[in-house]
Image 1 (cartoon, rainbow, N blue to C red):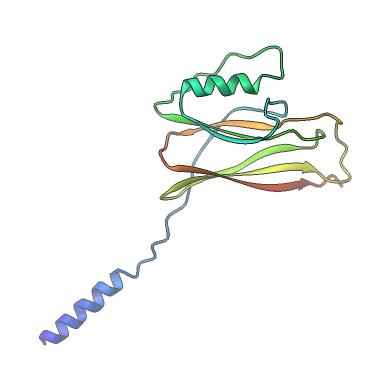
Image 2 (cartoon, rainbow, N blue to C red; image 1 turned 60 degrees about the vertical axis):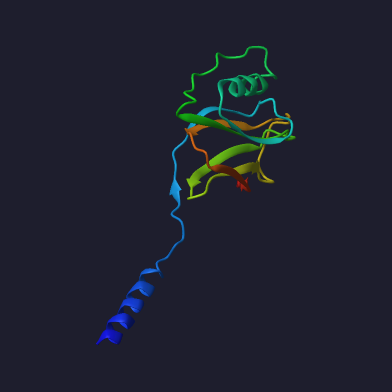
Length: 156
């Protein structure tokens, strides 16, 4: 009987350890602070902004192509942080940027976004554009990774 109790205890504890340990992935909300096709970023850029000074630098860069810089929005950096995604200079107005979703795992935050471009049959402006988006999320010490995908818009 003693051996049966020991064997059953071992089996019971073994079963408890076979629990699926994959980390839960949750979608986290975000707020768009600024989005345009005329930002000041000639090269693809992703950035995490965690301070007012960093925000002021990015805000000036965003508006470096215009003559009037709007008033900087108020951000509570004690509770939130900003994420910048810019896809750089593109050769026509058919390009854009779309943040699909932001997910959080046990170890990281993942920003999934699309670089959109017009399909072959689309009419576009012949202007150089600089698409970007600046978003606000809750503050976190987790590593932030940016995942880019391309998406072609069909204009048939």
